[in-house]
Every structure is written in structure tokens, then in C-alpha cells.
Image (cartoon, rainbow, N blue to C red; front, top):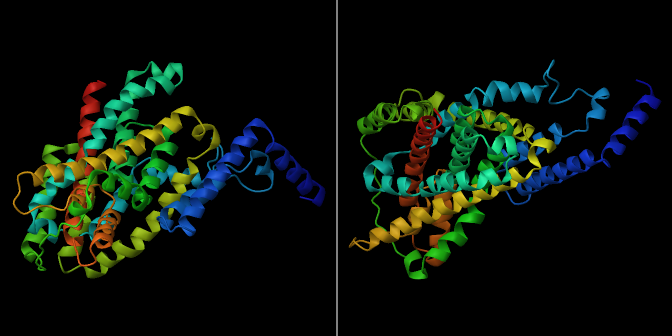
Length: 403
């Protein structure tokens, strides 16, 4: 292409940005830039937000520039590399499964096995999922286009994915959204899930402080450093997979991959594979997952009223999941002689290990000698299991309702 052709394409691209569609593209560039800023400047889950932000830039490049460079999304006839990644990794649920293998290899279930009561905090912190599911069913018909609002099946399917956002569990959210074929809404669902997961240090502390007193946040909890027997650690992932697969079959793919990763860690004969899952696999899939999610943030699908409602409902779910865990801990303290630090309940969400670290930091801010990290980690691990089971229950429930 000669210089005049290049200049002509450049002029056309600049002109496009001042059309109605072009202004939407500029807004998406601002949103993408904000995500990149939060990743680099604020260090909010940079491994996720930076690829998401850059993927959004690629997906929103003006179409008039396609004569100068191949489109990242491609066309219906010839898909671009972002579309290929999305179809190969998210549409068929491969990336969520691989991420769970990596997460499983990182998790030590020993603290949870030593104090099984923490599993209840993982269950209580899923309250926001079901509360948001019901609220979404009520509110979605007001913002969806008329032909979609009249489709009760779509409302139920979309409400299920929105509710799972509250668990701060991105892979499970994607799994549920894919199961119900919500491709058109994948951008706000996935961005909300991963953005709120990265904003745990910002969102959780104000909610916790609003529901607890300083005296409650200063409660100390005893912990004796020792690991569960090796046999128990090996049997745990096998038994959990069998039980979850029988009781909630729809959770089997994610629970199974999570437990398989953990079995690699605990078996003692696959240390090299365990380290590969924790490092190379986790890093590679995170990069591909992030940029694939960013590719769904196309202006015409993202800048809509239903997108705004999905983002708000996702935040509502996240806040109520946190509040549900804290209030459950406060309720238990009415009957317990040895009080539980209520902040532990907030760690029952699935954002592992971010939430546990946030709880420990808040405890040290109130009392420099208060160490509740292991209890918070136990609740956090329980939340990881709880969110997957909750996702399976939601899929089963909604599948029965829309038959």
C-alpha cells in the first residue's frame, strides 16, 4: 500500500471516531485504559485486568482500519485470533477447567480439614448468589429489549449467571454463562466477575466495618500449626469429587478439575507437575483467559442499559455474599463460648487467596499481634468449594424451571 492509501485509511479511521459508533468506541477505549491503569498503578489483579483491558482495545479497533491490519476479531467467514481463542477456550469451557486445575494445585486443604466447621462459612457466604438471582428475575425485564424481556427462559438463564458473580469466582461464572449460552451478555458478566474479584481489597473492608465493631474485629482465635495426615489429604479430593458428583452432578467438571489439581499437589510423587500447574499452566491460561474476555467487550454489546444493570447486580451479589458470611459468624457467636472473629465469615467467598489476605490485614490493623490468616484461609478454601457447588445447584434449578 502506498503512502496516500495509508494516509487515506488513517483519515477514515479518525473520522470514524467522531460518528455515533465511533464515540462508543472511544468510551470503550477509556474503559479499557481504566482497567489497564488499575492493573499497573493500583496493582489490582494485574495478571487479569491488563489482558482484559488490552483485549478490549483490540476488539474495538475501528473497522475502517482493517485494510491496514488484520482484524483481531475477524469476520464470520474468517475469524480473527481473538474469536478463535474465545471459541476454543471459553465457549467450550476449557479455560475455566484448566484454571481450576491450577487453583487446586495451589490450595492446601489441611487447615480446613483440621477445623471442618469452617465449611459453614463457605456456605453462608453464598447467600448473595441466591438473593441476587431472585432480584435479577424481577429487574431484568425492565432493561432488556422487548423481545428478550418476554422470554422468561432468557431471564432465568441470565439471572443465574449474574448471581454467581457474587461469589467472586470468575471460572464458575463463565461456566454457568456458557452452559446457558449467554454469549451476547458474556462481556458484562465476565468483566463484572473478574473486576469485582480483583477489587476485593476495595469492596470488602467497608462492608465488614459497617457490620462489625472494633472489639469484634480484634477477637483472637487459637490455631495450632500442624498438617493433616497425608492419607487424609490424598483421600479428601477423591471423596469430595465423588460426593459432589453424585449430589450435584452439574458441579462435577469444576469440582473434579479443582480436586484433580489438589491431588497432584498432595500425592507426593508429581511435584514437577504440581509446580507446572501452579506456575506455567496458571500463568498461560490467565493470559489467554484475560485477553479472550476483553475481546467480548465490543462497544455495541457492552454500552447498554442491561450491561449497567448486570454490573450493579453483580456488585450487589458480591456485597451480600460478604455480608452474609459476616452476619453468619456474628450469629454463631451468640451460642459459642469461644468467639469467632466475624471477619472470618467474609473470607467465605471464592476469591482465593485474596480475601483471606484482606481479612488478615484488617485484623493486624486493629491489633498488630492478631493472626487469623489460617482461619481466614480455611473459610476462603471452603468458599471456593461452596461457589462451585452453588453454581451446580443454580444450573440444576434453572434447568428444571425452563423445561
